[in-house]
Image (cartoon, rainbow, N blue to C red; front, side, top):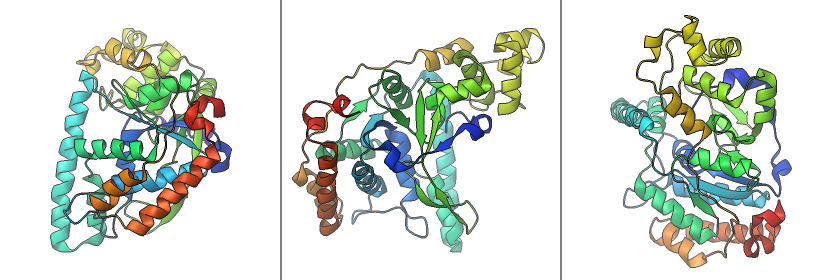
Amino acid sequence: MGVDIKELIEDIKENVKIEQLNGKKIAFDAYNALYQFLAAIRQPDGTPLIDSKGRITSHLSGLFYRTINMLEQGIHTIYVFDGKPPELKIYEIEKRKKAREEAYKKLMEAKERGDIEEMRRFAQASSRLTDEMVRESKRLLEYMGIPYVQAPSEGEAQAAWMTINNIVYATGSQDYDSIIFGSPRLIRNLTVSGKRKLPKKDIYIEVSPEEITLEKVMGKLKISREQLVDIAILIGTDYNPGGVKGIGPKRAYEIIKKYGKIEEAIRAGIIKKEELAGIDLDEIRKIFLEPPHIDVANLDFKDVNEEGIKKLLVEEHDFNLDRVEQGISRLKKGYKGIGKGARSYGLDKWL
């Protein structure tokens, strides 16, 4: 879910055309993308795609075809997978798990009533990414020749570090946490661009990629990154869900802009100390400002393993052979657009 700073930066987001990203390397938050695929790639009643054994395949379909789409547009896709979450995130993980379980119960009730709209709504809310799905996703990427990085902790933090160090052009995610982690550029909507149905409404809107830069965020708000992190804490992060009761994005910004940091706002009596009871300010700041990462240099594309792709998608999960072969053909053509050197010398040559 991440930190909701949308209200503060709505007017500095810029729509970006796919062709503007041609030749750019983008590090995608893999879990974020896979959850998007699980939520979006479904049948009319909200049921996910499944194989003959009842196993969900929406994540594989999205990863295969959306990655090919981006590669055809010249976008050098790199996926970053989450590692061990910070201890402070355990509560939020459990909370999300319970929310999915509750959504699943409501899904079953909606099925009994035959309420298609509610079935679609709660089916999406009950999406669950399993360890097996993650393993399959990594296998598919290996067969496709697409590089991925296993982060030691938060994937968005690793992707932000890669962007800061010019290993990639931008971080790709739906959440705004990448900006809090210090990513110079965040690209949203690349994995979900196209038409999207509004919740509880029979209305579809066109979703286009958008770019947010840390420089413009800092320029508009006129604060430091440390202060941006304090704003996030007041609003609520994955490490202190809910933030401080009654404080939204605008109020949090006003407080930090005037007092500089949370402790000073407490001394001034603007925030009561007990409202932050149980919140480890320094630890949360460290997660955002000094997150663990691994050093990566070249992120090479590899040769396409056609047989591996067919085995995983067609033999194991009943994908249509003709469609998969068409996808493989498109994948190879996409590689030609990037150039052979991207596989042999690393992507830095092509940025």
